[in-house]
Image 1 (tube, helix red, strand yellow):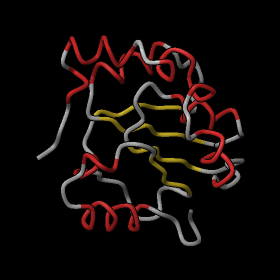
Image 2: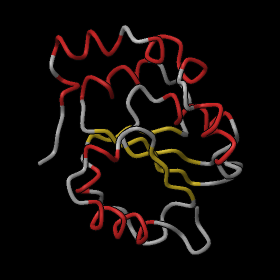
Image 3: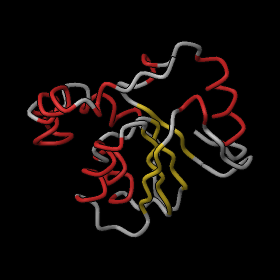
Length: 138
């Protein structure tokens, strides 16, 4: 079952008050380690699964990504991401990872942080990701 607590008013209000929600990546405890694992984004087509407020999407664009798509199930999260994003290379799409529909080879990088644990059966999601990745993608 697709879980979406983030459109619940009370949950969203509390989540929005977390330091990582207010200050972005610099307040995310895992960011300094995750950033070291990321591939170069320059010229890449990036898909971010469970994009939330769009912090990672904006980072990818700042690093030179050609196009970034952020996918999230929560309309509240996407509304905030859209409000805080001015870069035309970034698009936000409402949807579940389990329902990802992307043409084969349409992304060079697919990533997610702190969202895959919501998926009950990861194997189909990984198959969809693999199909969406261009040959040699990350």
